[in-house]
Length: 142
Image 1 (cartoon, rainbow, N blue to C red):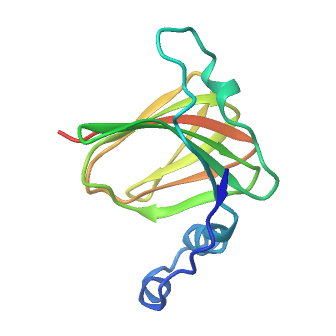
Image 2: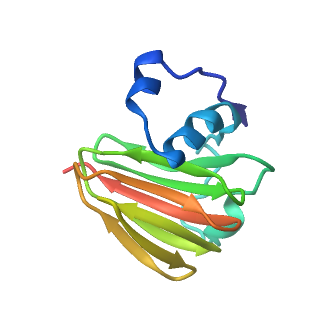
Image 3: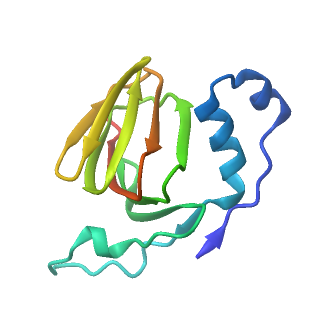
């Protein structure tokens, strides 16, 4: 596991206005990532068990990272968030545990275990964990 210690660029800070975004910038220092080298092939697994919570942090774990797309697991501690941003491709969240608020183009959606929501390409979106929250993020680059 690696801790991110990057400080946000000043010009990025100036462009960020929302409370959620400011919380994300603060949390950049607390984000943890795990590598995908240990994901078993041709075996059954419970994705919610493949990423663990960490106090005051967002833990991400890449399952697959290819030029065509990515599969990533996230575990958000209660109150953690990803700031509003855009992506050049559609991204799909599948909720594995807990509840969260997904904000797409200013509209709020409550999602919980078993729910799926697609965030359209080039539309601002954010994720706020109302409680401990795990998700699978699928992004296909096509």
